[in-house]
Each structure stands twice: as C-alpha cells, then as structure tokens.
Image (cartoon, rainbow, N blue to C red; front, side):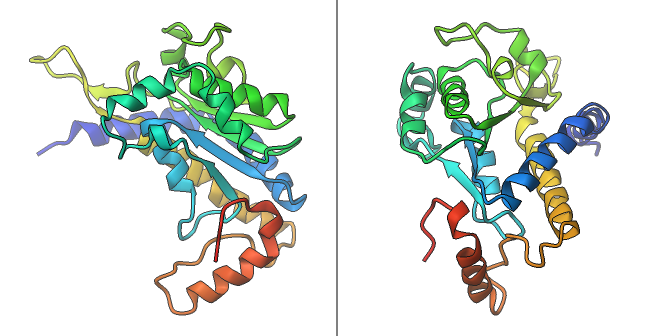
Length: 247
C-alpha cells in the first residue's frame, strides 16, 4: 500500500529546506538574541492554526520562554465549532487579544495563519508592530496571494510581518486530489509548520549553548524522575521572560 500523503509531505519539506533556510536562520538569530537579552517571545494562531501555538507551549523539549496568546472563542473545543470561523473574521477581536498581553518593544511575536486573510491574525500582527515587536509570520504565501484580505486595511499577514516563513502547501491547505472529488483531502500546514518551528527551536538551543548558556530554557519531561524540580529551577532563572502561570 502506498500513502501518497507521505510523498507529498516529503515534497513540501524539500521546498521548505530549499527556499526557507535563509529566513529560518534569520528568525533563529532573532530568537537567540531575544532570549539572551531577556526579551519575551509570543505565539498566536486561530482555530487549527492555533495547534502550533500549543505545539510550542509547555512541551518536553520545547522552549520554556514561549508565551501563547489563546483566544478562547477560537479553540477547537468551542461549540458550535462554526463560532471559531466567525470569531477569526470579527474585526477588532485581534486588537482586543493583544491588549491583554504584555508585548513590548523588541519582543518577538510569531503569528501563524495559513491563508493570512482573516482579521484576527492580521490585527494581532498589526498590534504587535505598533508596540515595536518583531513580527514573524508563518503562512502560505501562494495561497494568501490568491485570496483577498477580510480586514478593512486590505492587508494580508505576509504584507505586515518583518519575517515571512512560507509553508509551501497547496492553495486551500489540503493536498491529495481524488478523481471522484472536487475537494482535496489531508491538510499539510500542521505537520509542515511544526517541522519548521521545531527546527528553529532546535537550532536556537544549539546557538544558545554556543553563546555559553549552560542551561537553555528547555522543558524537561514532567514524566521523568526529577523533571518537575528541574523545570521549576529553570522557571526561576527565566521568570522575567515568562508570562503564564507556573507553580
């Protein structure tokens, strides 16, 4: 049995490796400097795009200094689920979300949106820029260029960000065509986006060590003996960068 989805993922990852390497290196440098200078790092995504905010947050092997911005009305446990689509299109909601955060000048804000067209992600990026944050967009540039913005500004996410990471997926995200259907199946943005971001996390950690950081802010597994104690010690060291509760 052949799984064409796996072949498609390999194909997309090859494009990412070829075309995004330079931007990934630039983003890595920005994150390293931010951590060394005790600045903060935030990440946002709406609905399924928010899965990558969860991927980066409070995870063994992940950066402890990642601060997620969660909009409760766009989480996937919302009922009815169609409410998430309405909220990500609601003008003003992204601005409100950022107002509740301590984002400041020279902080890093990572915004994930595949289409890059909905107001919530656009406004989160805009508000971050207004505060002087460095905005990193993870999006699909081809997809985004094929659609119009739903924000009054007419801008899409890739037109706002300081750095743009392209996930090189298909327009519409799903990637497998079947003769019997006019809708493709099997989305790629989660696996590709997670690969991009975890690659950056790994490189950031490597660079922090190269800069003489003996204990980079990486979570130990809470399921390993001593993991809780090690995490608490790291939290104390990096607590000025962390804006979520950790007890």
